[in-house]
Length: 234
Image (tube, rainbow, N blue to C red; front, side):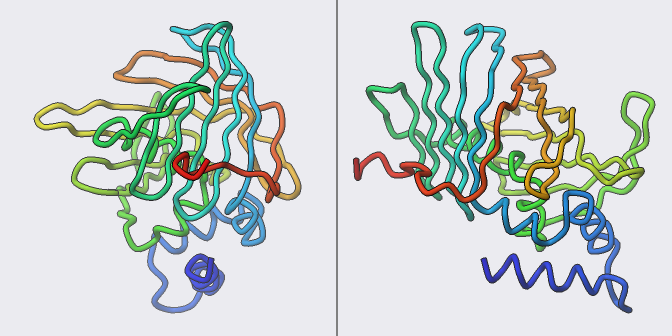
């Protein structure tokens, strides 16, 4: 938390001499999402949502996040459940009755979901990794693009609308040997919840194919019953 507060303090001073283009852009993004207080609220939250999966059909989802690197996602479909848990460098996947350790691409997919689910908290926390990709066009619209090269196997790009400084697209590439799997999420229907700007619709894609839609039902910040994030302690 202290690291995020330090970065926020630097962003607030972004108008001073020596501030980089990334700092100026990131300060505008932070303000668009509600300001520094909003970023702090995004350090612990729960999202409850409806999911329309192209493969599984309609489901109900719960997504818990706890900074800096804990994520738990539970999805209940008709007749099936899916559970994903990330606790730092450890990951688990399975269903409501059994979880197994995963690594490689399955864990990196959870890291991607974590980082793209906590805008602008993830951008602020990982300011030192950000790379300015400048202005780029997408579907006839102009964006400012920030890249977050997480590791040799995972990188993300955040597409920022220069008119309102909202992140409306996030893309991720997961490399496994010579192969790269590309993911993308489009954010829509932004609403303010407890002072924090939240996208209530997420359109998800993998390898260019639409995989499903997540529609948020409720957001709670700092709930007392987040997790559990380490299934081995259950």
